[in-house]
Amino acid sequence: MKQVTIGIDIGGTNTKFGLVDKDGRILASHSIRTPRDQSINDYVEELSRSLHGLIDLSQEELQLMGMGIGAPNGNYYEGTIEDAPNLIWDGVIPFVDLMKEKFDVHTVITNDANAAAIGEMVYGGAKEMKDFIVITLGTGIGSGFIVNGELVYGADGFAGEFGHVITVWDGRPCTCGRRGCIETYASARGVVLTVMAELAGSKRDSGLRNLHYQEITPKKIFEAAEAGDPIAQRAFERTGNMLGRALSNLVNIFSPEAIFLFGGVARAGHWIIDPTKNAMENNVLPIFRNKVQIIPSHLPASDAAILGASALAWKELEKLKK
Image (tube, rainbow, N blue to C red):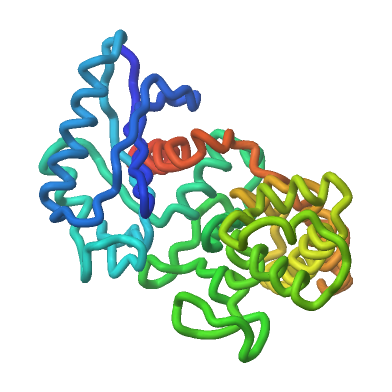
C-alpha cells in the first residue's frame, strides 16, 4: 500500500492539490478555482469532493497519512487562515478543523512561503542544509526561514514577513498600507514599476515602449533583457541592487548557508541573481562575505506549491514519531 500525503496550495485565483509520496512523486493532482463569492463551508465541501475524487481515481492502493496546506496568512499554531488580503473570507477561518471534518488525518497549515521552504528542505536543493532562507518573488514577496533544521514561526505563527521590511523610507505605496516595503521593488509588480520609471526617466530606445503597460510582465522584461534591451537590463540591475541590500540584513541576522529564490522574478536567472549577489556581498559584515550562496529554487515551478504543502505534512508526521 502506497503511503501518501495531500498537499494543498490555496492561491488567490486557484487552489492546487495533489497526492504525494515520500519521495516527492506526485501521483495525481488537480485544481479548482478559489472562490470570489462562495462561503467557506461551500468551498471546503467542493475541495473535499475533488480530493476524494482524486483518491478514488488513483490506480494504486493508497494509505492517506496526512494533509499539508499552504495558504495566505495561514497560522501554523492555530490551524487558521486569518484576514488573508487576497481571499474573500474575513476574520479567522478555522480551516484545519473544517478539513479534518472531511479527512480524519493529521492536518497542518502554514503560509505558502513557509511551505516552499519546507519543500526545498524535503525535496529540493536544501536537503543537506540546516540553516537557509527561501524568498518567493511573485505577485508579492514571501519568505521562509529555516534555523537549525526547523522553520521559524515566531510567537504567533506569522514570523517571516520579509516582503514588508521597509527598504525605502516614504517609498512606493504597498498593499499593506505602508510605504517602501521591499515587496514594492522586488516583486513582479515592483519590477514592472521600475521599468515604467526607467521608461519615463530615459529616452533610450526600448522595445518595451511598444507595449501597453498592462502587457509588461517579468517574462517580457526578461525576454527584452536577453535581447539586449538597456531599459530591461537596467531594471533588473536596480531590482537586484535593492533586493541584495535587503538580503544583507538577513545574512547579518541569520548567517544562513544559502538563500533560495523562487517565483516569476527569480526565473530571470543571472539578470536578477548577479546584481542581487553583488549588492548583498557589498553590504554584509566582512565576517559573512562570500559565505552565503544565492540559488534558484530546485523545485519544479509547476509543482512547487503542491510539493511544499505535502512536505509540510511529511515533516509533521516525522515529529509525531519522535
